[in-house]
Image (cartoon, rainbow, N blue to C red; front, side):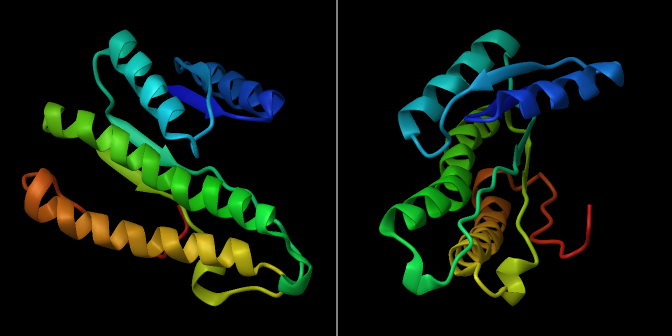
Length: 160
């Protein structure tokens, strides 16, 4: 398992230690999921080292909680960049490898806030709603075109 992080190395190391304590294997990889060149390079490195990508879990998320009138454009760029663009870029790059392999699974995590909204979380809600729509569209596309023999679940609104 390759665990990506951008800013919180301590949390990434804690996750890695929990994985190892459960007899799992893992490694850390530092890159910005909102930067396409970094995503491309990281996935290339993973494929070279491990020969395949079997599962992608898009679970990165940041929030900038405030009333909309107090938010800055940079808040939008950070939240949408990490939460939505990062999900899109990782899915795009990894899906190419999965199509070559003729196998793979992608799990996109969102939030109930993306369905219901929450006071002071308009940016976060927009990004998580975007992930839900993106996931539905991708699942339908992949079912018909990319990996028709792979069973796809569009979106589950249940806790994992």
